[in-house]
Length: 355
Image (cartoon, rainbow, N blue to C red; front, side, top):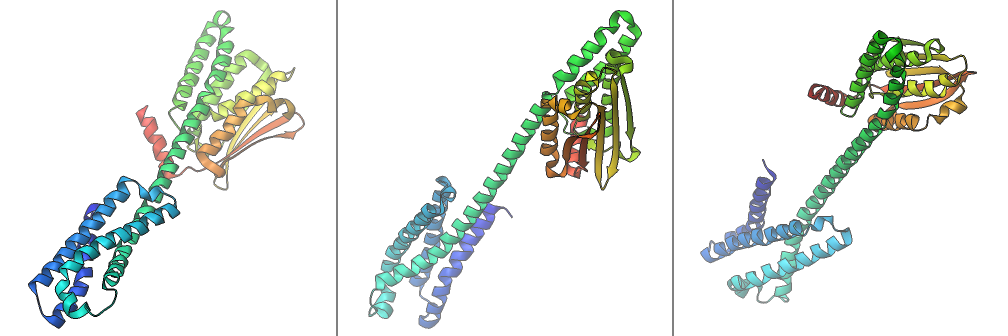
């Protein structure tokens, strides 16, 4: 049943029961009178009309968004006004009843007024509280959606900031091969195209399979070996159960690039990159070890900061990232990633199919 139908059902049923609660005992005691019955029907219709007008007002001027003190003043004012209208309408219609039953009672008007204000307060307070809670819930939902949109926009910006780094380095690696070794240059161009393709898709996808990310890393390392030749050695070891784990696109490539730029490239005799992926306590644990000292590796700056922020946006506190000096001459970047929820994984699959 729709909210509108529920509202009108409660309006009609509520006012009918309220008026009949007073009319039926009167009819049983004094007998059925057509004029009194018409008065009861008129009260039902008037009550429905007046409270519906209140509903239109509170929705039109959005009273439920007001601070509680201001809202309370408007509720009290509405009760007093609507109670006065009901009293002024009912006293003339009840003049026959007043003549026989209420004539000798003092303060008849104020008794009527207090009774109607009490009835209207119950209705107005119930509707206002419901509307206030509903408005607060919707505002909270909109706030959450806005926050999610902002976080997604921020994540896209962070992903897009990664693209120039590997593009520039890859082109530098290929340039020297064009005349020296055309066949190897052709292979390098293929590897570069794979990296560029994945970098373009990174702006559209929240996560990718680990095996896909590792292929990008391997293409990147092969391109870097063109520049460093025997000065760069690398190994990649992965737990087979982890290859379908979802990871942020281009994240590992950024960390490997940072290790080469601020570690391997500064070693006179070159160095190594050792990438290990394993599962521990339902977490994907990634270690990227490279030659170097932490004092120089920390200058990775934007890339490392983006990695931490991307993990925070996508996984919250469930993921972690740190970089530390594992031992003399070896720096380690450690990433821990939890299993994504089914809804996020489904969103990732939809994004893949859309590409």
